Length: 288
Image (tube, rainbow, N blue to C red; front, side):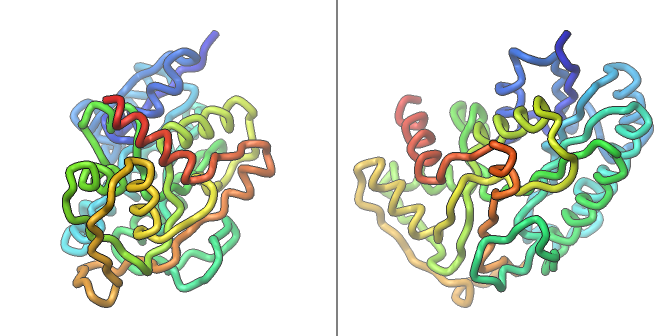
C-alpha cells in the first residue's frame, strides 16, 4: 500500500519536482495557495481530515527576499505561522512533515561550507522568517527540515512555468544577452530533481528526524557557475561582474553561503556535484 503524500506549493520549481519523483510510489494530493492556505489552521486541519496524509511535503514559501523587508507580515505568515499550523496538524494526525529551509539563515561570514550544527544568524526579515519556520516545523515529532539554496531545474523549468536564478542565467546565455553575476557570492546550487530524490530516500529509509542540508555537492561563485553553463552551451558569455558592495539591495545577502551535505552523505544519500547537475539541466533545456 503506497503512502499518502500532501504536497503544498505544488506549482513551484521544487513542488513540481516532488510530484514527479513521488508519482509512482505514493498517492498524491497537490495543493497550491488557491487550494490550501497553509497559514489558515482550520483549513489545514480540514485538509488533513479529508486526505489523511502519512506525509506532508511543504514546498510553499515566501521567497521575495527584498520584498519581505517591506512586507514582514506576509513573509512571517507564509514562512513561519504556516509552519505552526502544519506542524500541529502533523502532530495531531501522526504524519511526517518535510519542510524546506534556506542558506539565508546563516550570515555568510565564514569561509567554509556551513554544517547543520553551525548557529544560524539571519540578517534579513526573509531569513528570520525562514528560521522561525524551521523551529515551528519541529512541533511535528517526525519532521525533516531540509535546507536548500539556489533551486533550479525540474519539470516546472522544462515547461517554462518557473526558472529560478540559475535558470534565468542559462536563458540569458542562450539568448546572447548580458548576464549580471556576483563574483563574491558563493553558493551550493540545488537541482530540484536531486533534492526530490534525496527527500524520497530520506523518507524510505526512515532516517533520523531533524535538520539536513540538501544541496548539490561543492560550491562556486555565480560567475564561475555562469562560465560553466556557457561552456556546456558552447557559448561565449557576456558577463557583467558584480560585487555585493556595488549593488544596492534592500535586504543583505550572505556572501559565503555554501552548505555541507555531509550529514546526508553519512546516510548514503549523496547528491551529485553541482557541475553534473548543471550539465543535466542544460541538456534538458536544449532538448526542450
